[in-house]
Image (tube, rainbow, N blue to C red; front, side, top):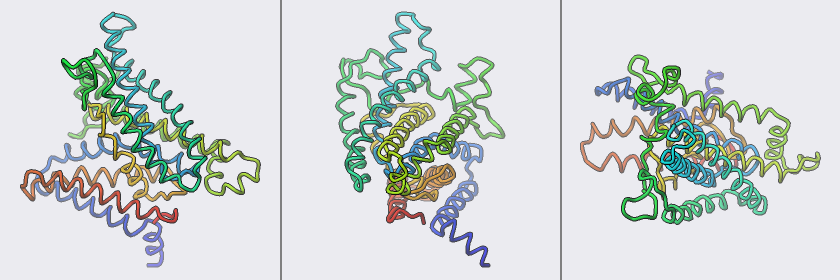
Length: 372
């Protein structure tokens, strides 16, 4: 009994309740007749498409800046990289150069541009956070909202020739939602897309097993990103960064430049935010611009906190557990509600209530920097 109580205290009663609620939703979904293959495919797909955005929280937490609500900087950089890559691909295809139109080249170009922009923005953002020590969460929240507002102006000002991106007949401004069907949408995660468009040697990237879609390409990308984070945290620079985040005074006395390690953590977090949104869009099949990414920072913070992280410490298992619980509940709750209560707009209202409720709970656990 004592051992069970110790395990319960370690895992956390609220987290256990959320986990049991998720299991109940899964069982209820199957009991009312939902296709198990479709259900588990949707859960896996949703968890994987969001996981790298949550993974981006780890460097920020470990470096001492806390929960990086300013991840919107990385998200905006990734989105800008994606639209620029699509436009370059379209123009190159039109001029028949560089073998354009290849979705892999477009995806790689989007990542290259997004990562470069995110690194620059992350460095400037890190300098700002070093000047407001003690108020990082407040400032990062303001930065996160402000960059989305600024990007609204950017999206309205861009003049592209790619019809998938630009508003027809207007000549200026980008669409709210741009389809990736003709670009890199689904090339890492959708079996149907891969079987129809990719060479035989790449068919393994996504496949079906017992009716469940296995996006192996997306799984491998997450594993690679998680391994990079883990490897960095084991390195000399990563250990110094984590030490600075845990005890900046002692670390500074040891001759380590804490401000520099904070900037490093901020840059890495912002870069992974850019990678995360590109992987999210690739899986979703659309680029969502303007205010669509506004709450992604809050959802990412909530997921890792639910997974067991604190404002001082975060690890990869926290990302996996938290993303599974957060996104899994959202995926399974809405279909169940839609069947049980047949009111047109209610499922969407409940989606907002559930997601914001989880975010509110998670943020309440952040006080004092200890995990629940």
